[in-house]
Length: 92
Image 1 (cartoon, rainbow, N blue to C red):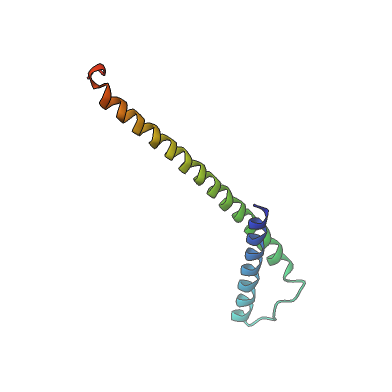
Image 2 (cartoon, helix red, strand yellow):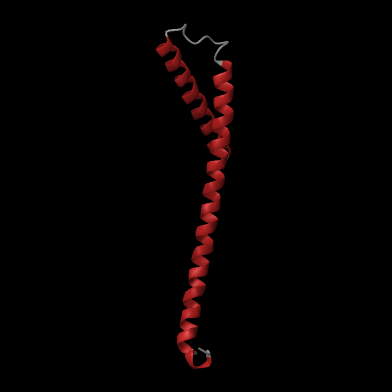
């Protein structure tokens, strides 16, 4: 989990820094100086980390939901067999 969040933070940082460099190139301003890169680096890391954490949490919830669906489907097949076997006892 932690490695996924760290990867997302690095990805967010890289993406935001590249977009900042592209923006400066299009505007024709001075290239990105180390002092100017602090905000994109920090914001990209935080935003990427949060998105990564949310994504990992969503994957875990999806796996749990699939497990619950499989359990319910197994129970449903058992109930369907019981209905066929004891149909005379079930009121309509």
